[in-house]
Length: 115
Image 1: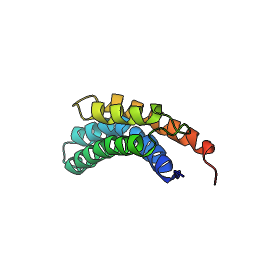
Image 2: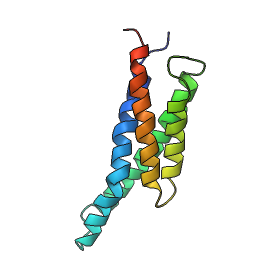
Image 3: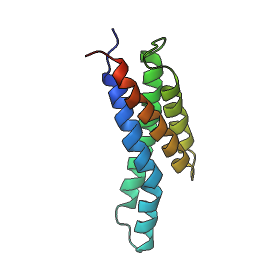
């Protein structure tokens, strides 16, 4: 029986990561506007790792829940597309929106699992 731990992980990372991707560009713009580095390089590295993590978790979800009717394919596809689009420069916010939707769909599917 497939467990719900991957669905929970995908949901939390998709939702929280999507929010960070959605507003991450504003944090970097604010740091650049102050005239200093203020950790902008670290933030860029964190955002790139987050984008790859969202993409990888979407792929893991597709493989793990293949054929499972409790989850479906929509949340996985949204995480994959969101992670891939966010890797394109200046489109991270679009990938963030898709990751938020995919993550929230994963979290809504948790009720289909029995404890």
